[in-house]
Amino acid sequence: MCYMSGNMQMDNNYLPENDGGVWQWIFGKRVSSTIFFNSGSDDGYVGIAAPFPGRILPVDLTNFSGELLCQADAFLCSVNDVSVSSTVEPRPRNIEIGAEMILKQKLRGQGMAFLVGGGSVMQKILAPREVITVDAACIVAMSATINFQLKSPNQLRRAVFGGDNQLTASLTGPGVVFIQSLPFHRLSQRIASRSVAGPSLRDNPKFFIQIVMFFFLAYVMIVSSIILTDV
Image (cartoon, rainbow, N blue to C red; front, side):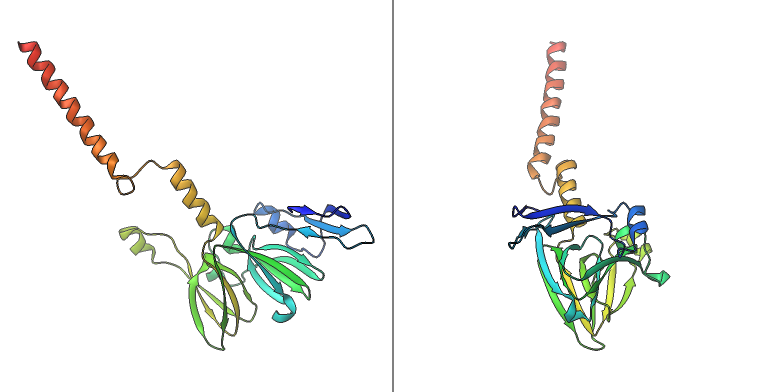
């Protein structure tokens, strides 16, 4: 919440319809929700902002038959009849280590939900039997009618040649999927690597020149001291 009118009130409550409270608590999630209500007779307003650079998506659940699946932390807020629950993928082959892949969110109701996606967000409408392969971390939300198949990377090839441990998902229509270009964990890892790691030779060629000059000057000083000592 960034701002709200003077007649708006804020309360922190646990909602019984959020039946995934235990799972959320196990994986370090919040088990309560912030409720805004108008205590006055005049109309009020509330300004909600995304927790990281991205785009806020207003989604009317009536256009998705009252049900929508989304990644953990994608749900921002809602208006009217919307319930949020946590669900675990029942197929064992889709379960991977990591709370973001195990703990998903399901939105039910007939109200308006607001989701947040990092970077640019694209809405893709899949026709029946249409297949699209995407980065699993880039999926913000999708219809419950979409068939979700997770593909694991080749661990042997990754161990030999290196590379990122990227998980791809095969989505089969019909349905609608929202895809983000910059997931939050990828943005945070990028910032951490830039702020913690030292300068590399690729990013800073002058660093290599400085190292060469340092050893050259050290060599000159050592040789000069030996010559002067002999004289």
